[in-house]
Image 1 (cartoon, rainbow, N blue to C red):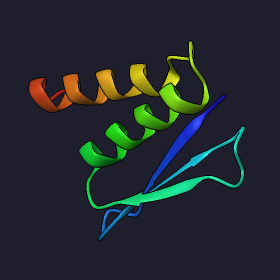
Image 2: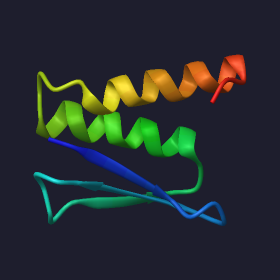
Image 3: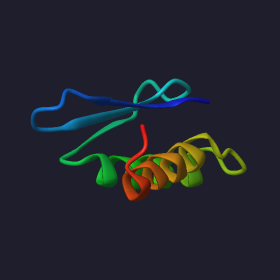
Image 4: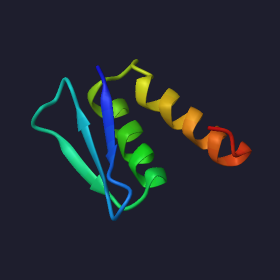
Length: 67
C-alpha cells in the first residue's frame, strides 16, 4: 500500500492511495495532508505504517531544517 501526496507547491496537496483508487483527498498544507494520509491508513489499512512513517520523517525535517 502506498499513500501518495502530490504537492503542487501552490495551493493544495492531493492525497491518493494505490490500493484504494476510489479514495482521494485534498488538503491545504503538507501537515494536514500527512494527518489525512495517516487517518486513511489507520482506517483502511490497519497494521500498515507507510503513511505514518512518511509523516514522522516529514515532521522531523520541518523541526530540524534538514532536507
